[in-house]
Amino acid sequence: MDAVEKLVPLAALTLFLLGAGYGQQAQQPGTAQNPAQPVPAKSEPLPQADAPITGAAKAADPATPAMNPAADPGSGSSANFADPSSDKTSTVPRQLPISSAPFDQIVDRTIAREHEYVKTLQQYSPIVETYIQDLKSDADLGSAPSSDNYFLGRLELTTQGTSQKSYLAQPGLFRSLLKRINSLYSLEFLPLGFAQMVFIDNAVFDHQHYDFAFSKREFLGDTRCVVIDLYPKKDSGNGRFLGRIWVEDQGYHVVRVNGTYTGAPHFQRYVHFDAWRLNMQPGLWLPAYIYSEESDLSYRFGTGHLKYKALTRLWGYDLKPSNQSEMTEVVADRNVKDQSEAGHDLSPVESDRAWQRLGEDNALDSLQRAGIMSAPGEVDKVLETVINNLEITNHIELQPEVRCRVMLTTPLESFSIGHTIVLSRGLIDVLPNEATLAAVLAHELAHIALGHKFDTGWAFSDRTFFPDELTFKKMSFHHKPEEETAADAKALEYLKNSPYKDQLDDVGLFMKALALREHVLPNLIQAHLGNTLMVDKGKLRMAPLENSAPQLKMRDMKQIPALPMGSRVQLDPWSDRLALMKSKPVPLLSANEKLWFEITPVFPYITRFNGGAPATAATASNATH
Ligand SMILES: [Zn+2]
Image (tube, rainbow, N blue to C red; front, side, top):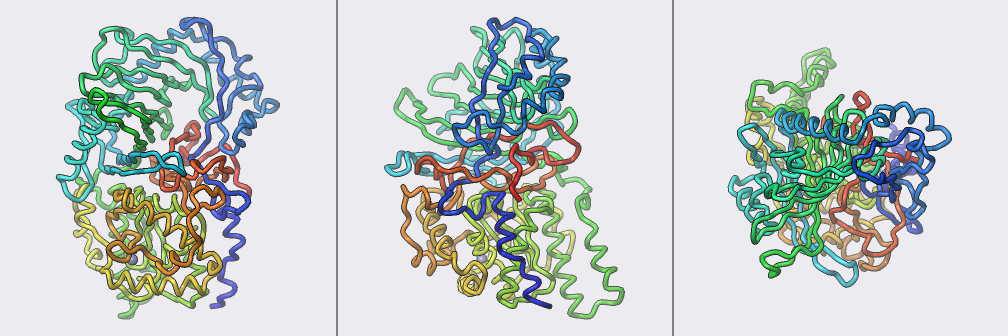
C-alpha cells in the first residue's frame, strides 16, 4: 500500500480536533470547558408569586438570555441561538401555552409531572458514577485537589426501596466507601448518597409541604423554562428541598434542580447540589448530571471543615441489566459479515485471526451491555486516525486491523483487547492535545505489535455470561510489568518517527502534571480493566520525555499540561453514544482556571428531543471546520 496516500494530513486532523479543543495554540491558551459556559441570564421577575405569567411578546424581547458556550467571557448576550431578528416569529407560538397559564396552574402541573417522574425512574436502572475531589488551598492555583473518592454502580429504584449495585471489584469496598462518604459528608439519611439528588423530594412534593414562588423565566440552552423557588413550610420535616427548580414550559418537566435539603438532624449537614435532567425520549426527561460542591462546610459543631467538588453522572438508560436471556441484544452483525466476506474456507492463519476477533467482539459486547463501553461512534474514528498516522510512519501492518473504542468511565486508563485499543472517557478528556493522545495510543499499539498476549478464551460466548456488576471481577486486560516496560520503550520509538515528533515536550509536561497529582488522586489514576499510566510501581510512562520536558510553571497561563475533567467527550446518557464537544477553547483569565485533572461544574445545553440525535450533543457553537 502507498504509505504517503494513506497518511491523513496532520493539518486536517488538527483542524478537526480543534473544534473539540485539541491543538491549542500558545497565543490562545484555553480549555474546552463543559458544554456551555453560563452567561449571566437576564430575568423577568414578576412582582407577585401568584401573578399570571405575562405574554409572549415580552419573552421574544431581544434581550432574551442565551447560554452560549462560545461567548467570550463578559461579552454577555452574544448568543447565536436567539438572534432576535430571525427568531422572533418562531419563538412566539412556542410560548402560547405558558402565556395563558396562571402560575398556580403551572405549579400544579409541575407537581403532577414530578410525581410521574418518581414512578418513571423506577423503570430504569442507569449506571451511576460519582467522582469526588477534596480540595485544599494552593499558593499558585487558589485551590488544588488533596484527595479523591470514586463510586461506580447501577442505580436501582423500586417502590420497595432504593439501592445501588456496585461495579467496583471488592463487594466490601462500596460499603466502606459509602460509609466514608457518609461520615465525611454526613449524608446518612440519604439512602443513595449523591444519587439521592436525582429527586427534588420523593416523599412529599406538594402544597402541604412547600411554598412555591415564581422567580423568572429563563432559557436553558434553547429550552424555555419557568424558574420557581421552593421553600419548605414550617415543620414540614427533615430532608425537605430548599432552592430553585427550572421547569420547561411545554410539558412542565423539571429540567434543573439547584439547592440543598434542610432540617438535618444534629451532627449532620446536607450539601448543595445542581442536578440536570435531559430530554432523552419524547416526553421523557431523566437525570444525567449532579454537580455538588462546598467551599467551607463546617460540621460536627464546627470541628470539621469540608471543601470538595463532586460530579455524579448517570447513563446507560437504554440498557437492560443482563441477568436475563437477552444476551445477544447489542451484538452487531459484523461477525456474520466477516465470515461471509471471505467466500471460501478460512486458512489456518485466517482462522486464527477470525478467532481472535471473535474473542475481542464478545468481550466488547459484554462491556457494552454492562454500560462500561460506549456504542461504536465518531470518537473511535478520531482515535483510529491517530493510530493510522503512527502505523504509516512506523511501517506497521497488523491483521486484524487495529480498532479503537472508548470506555465510559472517568478514571484514567488504557488497555487493549486483542487488536482493539480502549481509552477511558476520563483519559481522553484530560489530554491537552493530539500529541499526548498519540503517546497513549502508541503505548497500546506497541503491546499489539509486540504480540503481547490476549486471552482468546472470550471467543467462547458462555464466558461473558455473568451479572453486570461482576464485570471488573471477571474481566481483566492488564499486562505484566515487563510487558509494560517493553511497550513503553517501543512507544517512544514510534513517537520519534511520527508526525508528533516535534511535540514530545507536551507529552513530558502531561506526565509531569500527572506525577504531581498521582499521590493525591489515587482513584483517578486507578485502572479497573487495564493498566494505569504507570509502567511499574511509582514509575509513570514515558520517563525520558518527562525528564527532558520544560519545568511546570503553575502560574503560566500559556502552559496547559492537562485539561479539566469533562473537557472533550460528550455522552448521550440514553444510547451511550459519544461525540466530541463543540465548545471552543476559552482564553484563561488566571492560573486558577487551569484546573488540570479537576472536576468542574456542568452546564449541558438543554434542547428538546429531536428524534435520535444525542440529547446532549448540540451546543450553541458550531465548530469552525
Ligand atoms: Zn500497557
